[in-house]
Every structure is written in structure tokens, then in C-alpha cells.
Length: 117
Image (cartoon, rainbow, N blue to C red; front, side, top):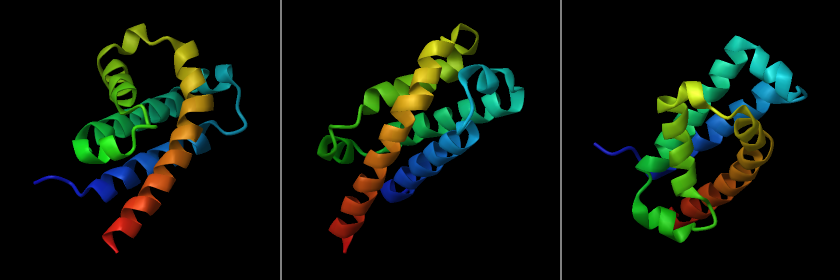
């Protein structure tokens, strides 16, 4: 059975919130050097990507301002190419892409919930 798209969007939102919270106020080296924090961040990137992959195509088509394919690709890279991770790219995603995605996903959730009402 498929998971409700709103729940998938909430999964993305929750994981983005965690990434922001786990890295807030810390520099790149502090985050990358803290093994548990780093693993938690990577796990949440995987959750975000997996949820994005499972969203229905029609929902992704309604919200083309979100780079769904790249988000899914990041999940695959984190999961399968762990030892080849470019930490600069990851840090840039933590600092820029995740907060931007959080804003967009919250707007999408609002729009999708309104459409159901």
C-alpha cells in the first residue's frame, strides 16, 4: 500500500527540521567531526530522498520549483557512495538546500491540505 503523499511531505519536513536542528550554530568541521551528529544528518538526508522518490508524479509536476530528482539523487549517493561523499557539497546542502526545501515543503503541505478541504 502506498503511503499518503501528505505523510511523505511531512516526513520530508520533519527530516529537514532535524537536519537544521542538528547543525544549528555549528560550523562545518564541528558537524563533520561529530560522528553521531554526522550519521544523524546523513540518515535524515536518506529519509528526505526516499520520501521524495515515493511522491506521486502528479504532485511533483504541480511543484516543479522543487528539484525532486536531485533530492532523490542525494539519497542514493548518501546510501550507496558513502565513502565518496564530497563533504563540501554536503555542507552546502545543509546550509542552503535544506532550509530552502523546508520552506518549499511547508508551502506545498499547506496548498495540498487546502486542495483536499
